[in-house]
Image 1: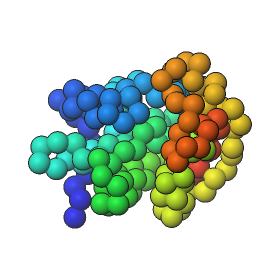
Image 2 (image 1 turned 90 degrees about the vertical axis):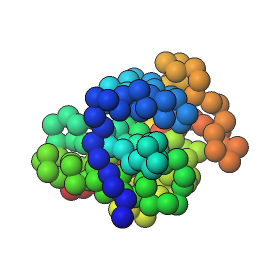
Image 3 (image 1 turned 30 degrees about the vertical axis):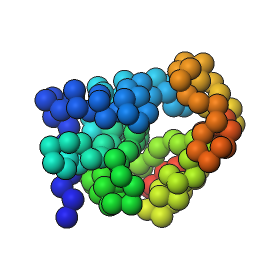
Image 4 (image 1 turned 180 degrees about the vertical axis):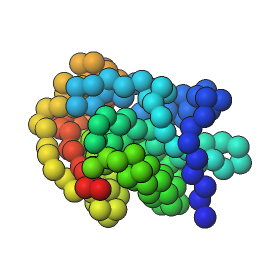
Length: 157
């Protein structure tokens, strides 16, 4: 069993370090820049280190997953984090859980769709626009795919 717990104030430094190794602490998506270190979230630890992290933003009936990363893929950590976030969203009265990924992130698309999320929108050029706010977003992403667009996925709760 994988233990998932809420991020606590004492975790912020470790969260920032983990995010620095993945997306960075600033996440720019759908025209919004988030400081992911300041968001509520969930972590999985192994041997005193963060093994997985999910951050989120809730506004009204919408529960947005802003970041989701596991130190190692296919270990169940991402699934456990997403399931725990779904439970939190339901308990908070959210009507949907949603997130945005990029057109190159085919592994994430597979992961999310296998867990019930559906693609509901493609925003052409959105990643190009985000790159203006965060120049470290690469022009070429996973598998050598040019990174241009954002895809929105949702799970109706």
